[in-house]
Length: 325
Image 1 (cartoon, rainbow, N blue to C red):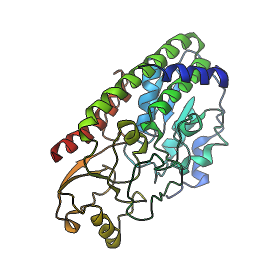
Image 2 (image 1 turned 90 degrees about the vertical axis):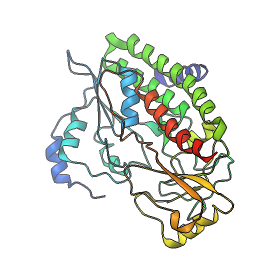
Image 3 (image 1 turned 30 degrees about the vertical axis):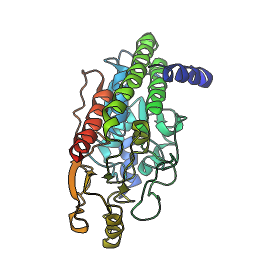
Image 4 (image 1 turned 45 degrees about the vertical axis):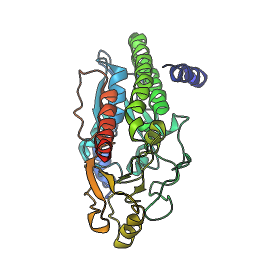
C-alpha cells in the first residue's frame, strides 16, 4: 500500500462509528535461515506475536488464512528470557509482531537479523504518547509520574487508534506475503476497525457511571484506556513492575486515600498482589486486571478475539467499581 496509502486507510478506518540467552545458543537455534519476503509455496503465512493482544489483532485480520502463535503467553514482557525454541519460532515466522521499545528490551538484539519481518507496533502508530499527559490529576506513589519504561507509554494495544493502524499494517504485510488473499485480509482489517470503533463507544458507556470512583492500578499501564473511557486512577502502586513498593511508598499511597471510604485495587496476574489494608481504614476491593491477556484463551477458529479480550478487561473494571456505590 505504501506510507501514503496506509495513512489514508488509517484515517478512513478511524472515521468509522533478565537473563540473556547466550549468543552461542542463539546462533545454534537460529541457523542460517534467511527471510525471503514471501510465504512458503502452498502454505499460509506464519505470524509470531510477542504478547497475546498482538496475536489477537493478527488473528482477527488473518482469519483462517495465516498461522498465528504467541511468543510470551503467560509472562511479563518486562522480564523475558528467551529459550532456543523461541528463537526457532522467530526464525520460521514470516512476520514477527512486537510492541517495540521501551517495553521489550529483549527483542532489540534480533532487529538486525530479522529486519524485514519484524513489525514494532510503536513504530506504526500516530497515537504513541507520553505517560500521563492527558490532563488528569493522577498521583504517583514514588517519583511524580516516573516510569520504568521511560517517557513513552508502550501499552499501545489499549489504544483504539493504534490497534486499527496495526491491523491495517498487518493486512498489508499479509497481502504482500500471500497476494491471492489480499482482498480477504483487507476486508478483515476494515471489519476489525469498524468493530473496534463501535465497541469503544459501548465500553465508554459501560464505565460512564463510575467515572469518579476511586481506584488504584498495579502499574502505569492504562493511560490509553483510561483516556478513552474518561476515567482516572487514584494512584499507581509501583513504578517498576516486579518490584514491590517500600514501606515509605505505601505510606505516601495511604495519603491519597484520605477521605476515601471505599476503593478498588487492581492487580495483574503475573505479579504478586500488593495489599494496602495495613495502611488505610478504607474498605478495599481487590480485582485482577489482565492487560496482557495472559488468562485469555487464544483460539485459532474464533472471531473477534481482540474485542472479546477488551470486553473482559472493561468488565473487570466496571465489576469492581460498581461495588463502590
